[in-house]
Image 1 (spheres, rainbow, N blue to C red):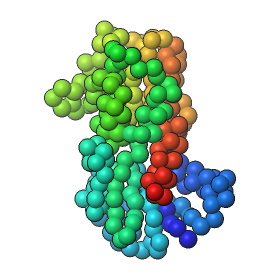
Image 2: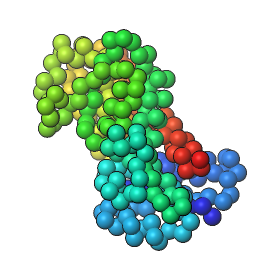
Image 3: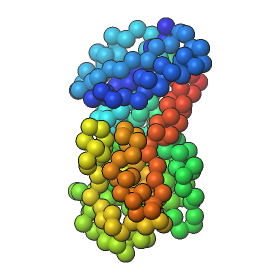
Image 4: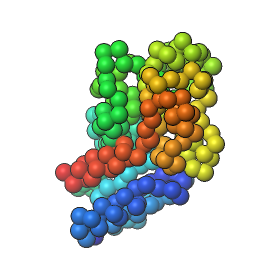
Length: 244
């Protein structure tokens, strides 16, 4: 039996276990199993993988997408550039890290937003998910600014998002966990009154299906999309990686 799974903490409301269980059933895959492995501390990673017989692949979620890298034998070029890993392939006793998030996000974004020569995006958050989003935007030729509560040079603080600036950026992407179940009453602190029908709001959060961020966007007439399609697409990319 080939073993696959997800590491992260917490994993109470994981998408992956249900998704792969349904995939295995629908495609009559009988020699594979997918399980959740809650890992509060990344230092327990080596012992965990030793304890799982016939391990072929893992997904990685918060807070370990960056922390797991030093524990791997190799990291694929794009994942190294991004600085975050969400897929690990086990082959011939070696571990290799990949990033399928940027491919999943890019494919999903292209179904939602028409890239133009002057397309500009605001990215809320600076974690591992944000790095994958930036890689996708670079590939699509979309310029962007990162917004953070603790901005680095060339980044913006939330209190700098005045209406004129908001009008310059048509694509707004939330990569933070704000609004995720059960804390559904939270959202990035942006001036929602500056939103219009010209804006496109993409939230990587998928539970709930419509976060407060997206609700406020919809109320302003903006186009909205959650992270479910991204998750499905990155999971399919991961499956290809594990089986190639």
